[in-house]
Amino acid sequence: MLGPGIITGSVDNDAGGITTYSVAGAQYGYHMLWTLFPAFIVLLVVQEMNARMGVVTGKGLADLIRENFGVKVTFFIFLGLIVADIGNTTTEFAGVAGSMQIFGVNKYISVPISAILVWLFVVKGNYRSAEKLFLVFSVFLFSYVVSALLAKPDWSHIGQAVVKPDIQMNVPYIGMVIGLIGTTIAPWMQFYMQSAVIEKGVKMEEYKYAIWDVVIGCVATIVVAFFIVVACGATLHAKGIVINDAKDAAEALRPFAGAFASQLFAFGLFIASIFAATILPLATAFYICEAFGFEAGIDKKMKDAPEFYSFFTSIIILSALIILIPGAPLILITIWSQVINGILLPVVLISMMIIINKKEIMGLYVNNGLKNFIGWSTIIILLVLTAMLTFEPLFVK
Image 1 (cartoon, rainbow, N blue to C red):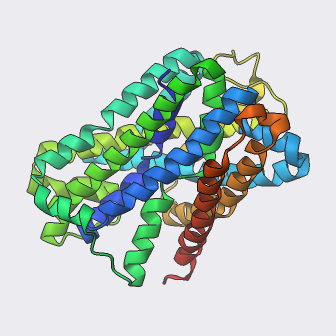
Image 2: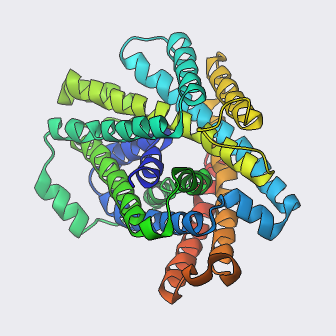
């Protein structure tokens, strides 16, 4: 039953997530580790609802949104999601380029080769083989645990930071807290999770086992994030090193934790980036095709699902080409894709809550009172955090 939950959770630690955790560790040491616990709760609540909807209805989230809210609403939601996902995929290829530079490989070699391999794997493979490779990718992300251990962190300070966090009430600190929690959940994740559960063919009698998949995925996500913060906190923060992205963190680790730790960090960034560069276009192709009634699925041949593979291919090509443009405005792309994600995330989550509470859709598996309380509380918190996270970069000079 392992697969959808672990894969979706692991992809959450993409190039953007690794950058956020690295910068948090470098700037604040271990003092941001406490934020990972509420982040875990948010991730767990939302993914459980996605899995349950997929198992009960046998329909993707996009399909359910179209049926319940109409084609016009669906069109405008997905127009924004497509733009955001192209920006997000571009960021992943930037992660591929940056990580390979640590090993001396130019982006004009690493990005095209990676894009071709991603395309071939999805187009020529099937769901079972894809899922197995994705699970292997998830395991490779634990290379960050080794990087952190090589950095020889002070575990007593880590324990103190978790149990008695030094919470500051200044703008940079609050902004970083928002970033750490906000990077945990994105609109595309909800669509991919539900589609993956359906394509895997999970039945209701197997659901209790599928929940373990979700839990393990969420735990693995937070564990990897924890050790990225620890690795950078133990070395870069201790030496006062300032970084801007995950590639900087990998390079800066070398003199303090050794070349092996630096290379492991870069390897983790490469795996995470190419992993997400595969899943994000897939998620986009899934929800577009589900919403408008096209055939979709990795198990289908290209002739049987031409629209699905056309969308997937187009996003891969466009995102890779943007990275290869000299002087491409990657920071601007990242900020605006984040803005669109921030605007659409509450819309997607509210749609989920409305759908999952309809007895004519979910039958006996609607949310109970506790799940509704947790679900709506999560949405309210995310609305506040998302609003702050989304609009803060637009006003910071």
